[in-house]
Picture 1 (cartoon, rainbow, N blue to C red):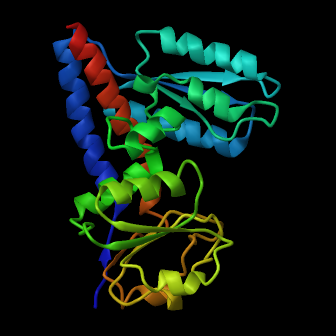
Picture 2: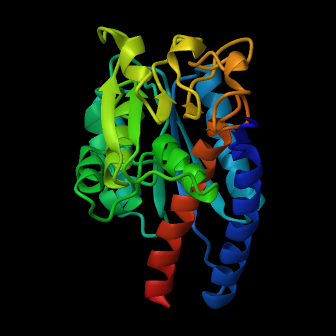
Length: 284
């Protein structure tokens, strides 16, 4: 069996071309208006700064704008909330991204939930999660939504399949499980403390590794013909799943790197364009 490679890098590049055409058309129709994504970086964490830069670069590649906001590491919750409220009230800002993590003195959940729903293009608010879970209109959390877009692009059957999600974080594992459930999968949510984890994974038609530990999920736990989605990335270029021994006996998999990772930023930009289009076209 030759496994299908779920190539997120290629899909993201294709989507960027499509988004570039949409942004160009929007500018022509609106006398030059373009979607604008505001990114908020609190503190000087190098990894966070790199991620914010990558998101800004993605905006530039498709012709939309980004508003880069940098706050000091000693910023308080109230100060950050004030900045978020300011962006909520700015009609020219169509999406707001608060880079995770923020310094420990800040109530991150309160700040995430201060982002208004129509600008929550990263899908981090409790309101957005609840609406998505109920099948209502909402922007999905970027990584799990990116995974769903990847599965759809490669025509991976989901309805009636048993999906096992290993991980329960509020921005990956939990929304991933709800999105799969909404796609008519039967979903089992596991985590690092789940008893008899290997036995549960062996039942899975679709395995999503989102536990945040390098090669925590062993190849021998995964049945032949499964679809394997690895949302992890760790030093040495490995994910959460032991992928190498699986290549010849599974149906499809996301490579690490080049699978899920590119779809995360791509989905953020995709949803930012969608938000900008809705607002700008409504004003024309």
